[in-house]
Image 1: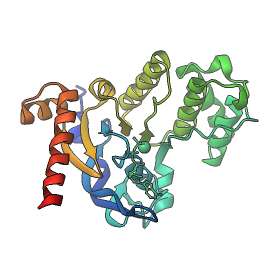
Image 2: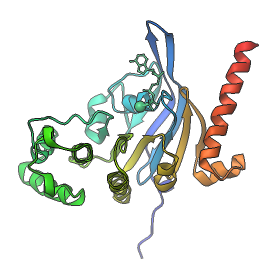
Image 3: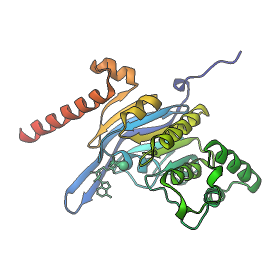
Image 4: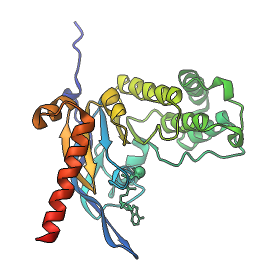
Length: 266
Ligand SMILES: Nc1ncnc2c1ncn2[C@@H]1O[C@H](COP(=O)(O)OP(=O)(O)OP(=O)(O)O)[C@@H](O)[C@H]1O
Ligand SMILES: [Mg+2]
């Protein structure tokens, strides 16, 4: 008899330990974009980073994607340290950044194909993979459209397609629905959910509570570089006796800011 596995049965694919990033900003002085955060994410799980503007979400995801180096702590992705073995990390991830990076003079198909080749997919495998992705993401209508003519939603889909073309086990999405209408946003969230069904380890950032409620197995509420609370939504609701995520979010941020203010004045 087949036994079903839950995410807890899998080893963590992302492990973040005491991770910190300090930027030295000419005007503001040192900025603690990420202030010693720790969490892990397993295969078959969607982990959400929920936080307001400037919380440190992008900084965290860029470190996991080897774009940025941390100042302290460490991060392992698919078992590889992001600083010591960035090339192994990159081979195991798909990273969708805020910037969709669509080229004006390439068609949707050409762009995803180009990325597939960069990842070294064999030509026959690549063509099958492209057909499959274009059909799942419903991109066939604009497969021959140039980047310069695509709508925001189309670009976003192409961006997701290129993120998953090499079928990596770990997927990192930075606000994948930003700027999308409700229909396309819904399609994007459904795609992410189906990737989870394929056993991928997924981390994604958002400032939209609804997305977290719909999609995430676990969430970290992040503000000013710190994780204020983390767990499943049920755990958070129980711990803080607040079933409404939005209320909880505002309350945690308010408490944190009050405390910082009191410490600054002391
Ligand atoms: N290269 C940089 N130099 C200096 N400060 C930076 C740099 N990159 C980010 N920061 C600062 O680090 C903090 C966290 O930024 P980050 O982009 O990670 O936040 P975010 O949660 O992704 O916000 P948003 O929701 O607006 O995308 C902010 O105060 C930001 O100004
Ligand atoms: Mg960001």
